[in-house]
Length: 159
Image 1 (cartoon, rainbow, N blue to C red):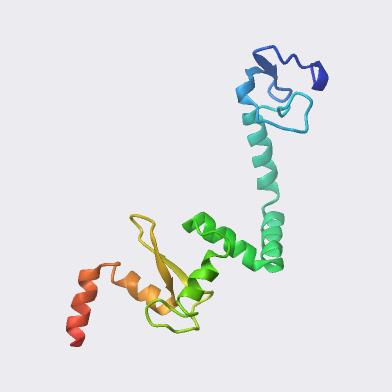
Image 2: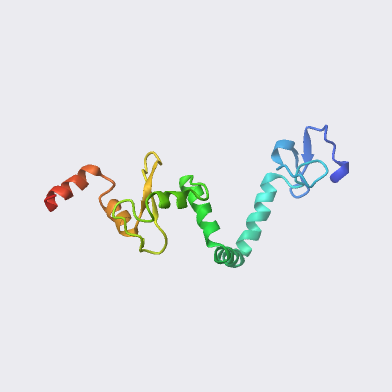
């Protein structure tokens, strides 16, 4: 079975030692640590191997995730804000500074709830409107982010 230096890079296919199939090079992930630049197992076999390991180690993975969060919670929050809203590290802090450290609606400096200020955004366009305290975020959610309904509430209150 060809491995490492014995792999023919001119061949249109490569042998996966796990499933023992000759597959096109595109069926192997790139890997800079091998001589030929591709992982030894095909993508499908790598996925199956990783998924089997993951299923056997769910408790270990959960503990590692909790430990990483405890060690650097701000890094985890930055990652989540980047993933969910496209905010780069530091942009949240800059937005909060621009809002003078408070909620964009009520200006309260203690956000309440379980964490920091919520990133308020349009669910249709993804555009970020500002940072809200827990109460204002929940209130907007209950009004369905509907400006007409909010105006009706203002009329009801006599404003």
